[in-house]
Image (cartoon, rainbow, N blue to C red; front, side, top):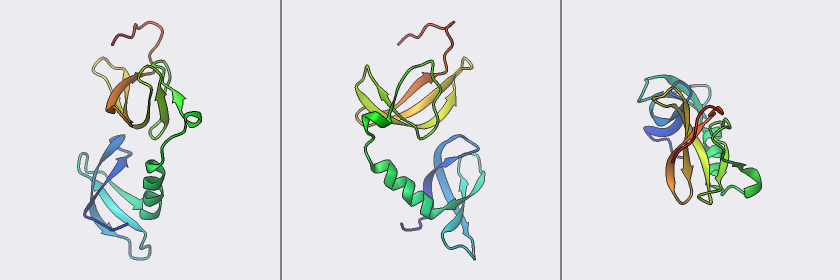
Amino acid sequence: MARGKSISHFCAHCERVTKMELVGAVEDQPDRTWYRCVRCRHAMLVDLNELKKGEEAAKKKPERADCSDYNPSNTYTVGQAIFHTEWDDFGKVISKEKTSGGGSAIVVSFQRLGERRLLENLTNGFDSQD
């Protein structure tokens, strides 16, 4: 993997995948480098070997058995593979967001549909509408 001036990586502070700019390398550890989130300016140490393994794993298509069926009442984690039964498409959760109403949403990158925002952790008091 070539070391560029920026990468796309999950920022733990923003809780989403953002662009990270190169800050500097660690002298004793050539596989670890400091990057800073361009959104929140939070710096983090990134292991380039782990990043490369993660990119290879992301390229693999998820199997139906490895995916969770999407349900708005469930809670999901970043990186989790889901299957939307109505859309008949696989996707991966790439970030989590708060909605304007105070609820939770996940951003899912689907194979055919692209990036979509879906509600999560809905209680029984709410009606889901499309």
